Image (cartoon, rainbow, N blue to C red; front, side, top):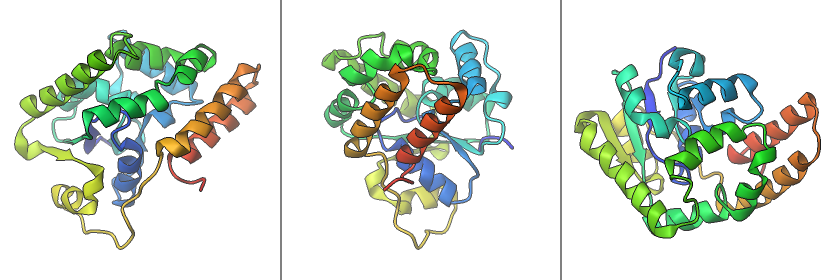
Length: 231
């Protein structure tokens, strides 16, 4: 299986909803940062990619699409490696995006507790480095967000790119991918209201010494929350 869709949108632009939507459309399993949690193999593969030694076939083995970090940080390399893949750039208002990051993936709690997380190397070497480690500097973060989005739109041919606001729902996404619009509503998952208590619970769990089975269970709970399976 090869990637048919690459998501270039950064985390907190509706990427979890997009992941679920792509899977509902039959594109196969979709990679998302949540797939890295609790997976020593994924952590190792992405750490090597961050060091300039990627193995994309191994990283995306079994996946038909990929969205969110860490994928979005490598959009340029992946677009070249998978020349037939379509690119989706999920967007939202830059100010609201920044505020969302500060309440979720880059909140003081998330940043403080990160060293004890098993997937910390990927977050630090990919996500934090993407923002030059200036994680709470509003102007810097928003400038990086806008610069990234502008680069994607400048470099990817229009017929290969969908600039997408998840609030638009199925219409533009299905038209771009040549899929019928599902009867089900477009998924809306991983809101900041859902994510905040999940992050708090995750920080508390990983603060202790968890064995391998407990780590896997905690990671599974996180994935279920992000994917909207715990409501």
